[in-house]
Image (cartoon, rainbow, N blue to C red; front, side, top):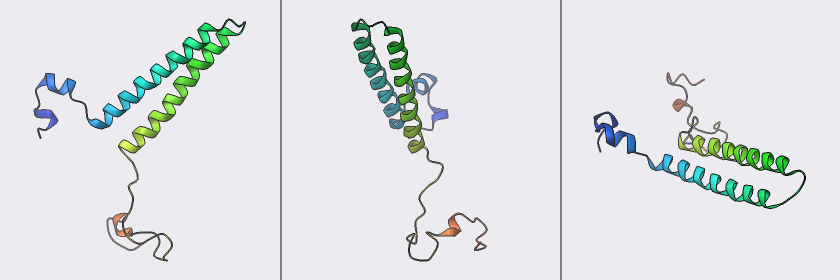
Length: 106
């Protein structure tokens, strides 16, 4: 595989990793669902139509933001699972030398 810096400029612009493709696809789905929900609000003739419209838009944006944060935190996790002892066997839940770079045992 080519390193990103050595790829031609046009290829760098269009290259998208599978993880980002999932985020883009999910965003498109959220936009489509928001438009469908907005169509339902526009079709009803109630005195509170502006309130319903704002509620649908805010709900769509907020739920998308929650989903996007969860999705991206799984793409590039800050904390990785520690392989080693099980949490309940009295060894403290894993190999702590992976956490302690100097291997002092603390």
